[in-house]
Structures are given as C-alpha cells and as structure tokens.
Length: 114
Image (cartoon, rainbow, N blue to C red; front, side):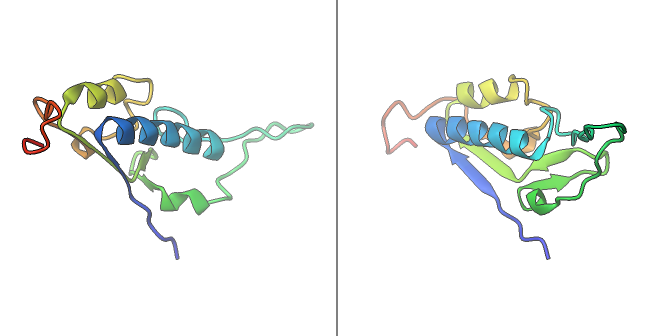
C-alpha cells in the first residue's frame, strides 16, 4: 500500500525551500523538469531502458494519465513574486497552477493584514 505525503510551502522561505527540495527529489528519482520519468539506460552490451522498478517515490508524486509525475505539493504566499518565480522556472510544467496560490500584495510586515 502506497502512503501519500503532501508538502506545504508557506511564505517566501517555505516556497524557496520546497522548490529546492522537489528539485532534489527529481534528481534522486530520475524525474525530468517536465515531470516525465527518465528511463535509465543499462550499461554494457545492451542499452535497453530500465523499467520503473522502484515505485517508492509514488508517495511524493501523483502520476497523471499522460504519464507525468506531479508533486503532491501546495505553495501559498500573499506576495505573488516568489510563486511566479517558481512558475517561471525550468520546472514550471511540473507544478500545476491550481496548487500554487498567491495573493495580490504582501502583508508588509503587518501581521494583522496577513
């Protein structure tokens, strides 16, 4: 049984740290910036691609019908700049826009507004 883990990035620090974390997850589990699984090539006389044997990373990702792995992730910030930076990075195709919530302006260090 696969368990599901959802990550939540709140504010500038949470979003930037979460984005870096997902880049590391992608590198460890051979997922390309567009969310597609990169089938590894065996070394040696045959260069047949290695199938998806290790499915332990599915607790972090959800596979779409198109074969794309989407992170179970939610980014939330009142200021749109940090979320926009993530959505304009090379990983923009991996993050669904409906899971990247942003406000129109920041709280300007006024915690009563935030």
